[in-house]
Length: 371
Image (cartoon, rainbow, N blue to C red; front, top):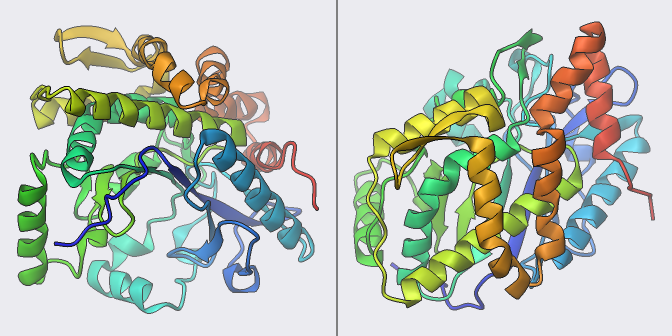
């Protein structure tokens, strides 16, 4: 199996799935085809549904560069939507939209997905952010992908931003997680162990017709051989752009730590998949208040305490990557709450989901100014 894990290591690529909404009432609008245009850097692309717009940066040398590109992309699509009486919002779910009202994008890949998965695909009205970290060396990439599995719950707890679904307060901090769980080949991935093992398993699944290629693996973490990256897919889309960049910087530092771990010839610890998955569920349910199991010690620890410990431990890596300033945005999430916490605070005032959606739209555009 061919790959492009040729470096340089620790480049960053960030993707955000954004909502296309009416500028006055904040309902989702099926309008992606009218918004596709070239960008000076990065891409503006469709996703599964016509009410979803994806922006993605180019591979960037630093978190700061990724932040500049992402801010420019948000600014561009915000200005483009405004010309049409629309706007954008960013969160893990739209608080009151119905999937039955959404149209599927007219592209072969998406039609094939709907044909294969039926209702499971049609109800996937969710919005995530994905972070790609460039890795040099296929074995290092597998080591990073396997090692990132233990970080999935804390990343979900920090990024939780979807407490509403179909006009209902769900009781979860990340409702996006169980919705996406209905897809096949999702969630906490298996530990691949080696590049040879990964390549053999992908070859088996494609030869047997289970999937067309490895991009039909939608796990929370996956090697991306065509791009030469490890892709982290667990996070809800973030409303505030500084939180998107903070999480990207945190993930970049995690990847660097795991590369150092590999280069020193150390082995990853083996944890039961069931406990990784249980911790992820607890993070989706409770966010930063989740009572997680600290796997090295088997002691209980809150997701908040674990996140604080991780930030302290990874700060030196962030400094070496020139991303300490961007990493500080994680502190804002820890001090003032996640996107889910902020949505719920707005909701408690008047129990008005359009007011919640207005807050999402306003915060998504905060600091942006059309060129």
